[in-house]
Length: 178
Image (cartoon, rainbow, N blue to C red; front, side, top):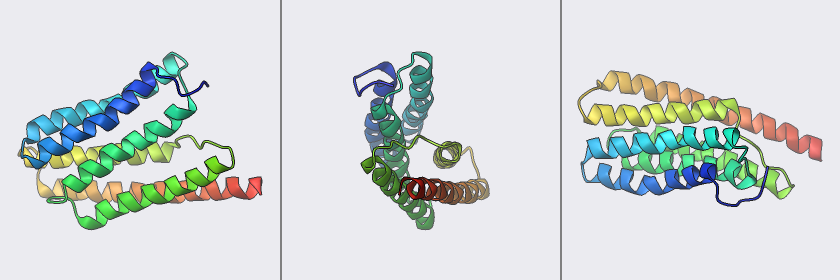
């Protein structure tokens, strides 16, 4: 497990957060294809950081936390920039769920425990990436609005399910810890 020293896995998490800036900027300027390709690469770094963390045994407490923070920076910032397409209830749900779960994680960390990602959290992130990709494809003329609406509803359900799962897991953990 190691400290927070820079390694390839942590580099890719940091890069994902930094790439959020050009994604949002290009989208807001109407350069949808460029924003889309930068977003795809940024999303791919989520796979790369996990791959290198496991393959090179570069799992660190910093990486466990910042990987999730980088996902949230990319997803929430991009979703907010896409509010010309995405419904506000979806964006607010994504933001509220992540804020609430992060608060619970901070509480757990204050008691000396880093809570790793759960499979429902990974599915939530994937579903949100799919929605954002759907918005890009809609803007580029490759997706129809009803398909995007279906993706938003599915992602909304997965986001809620993930929030409930984390809340139950963390509540159980806190009860065990006292």
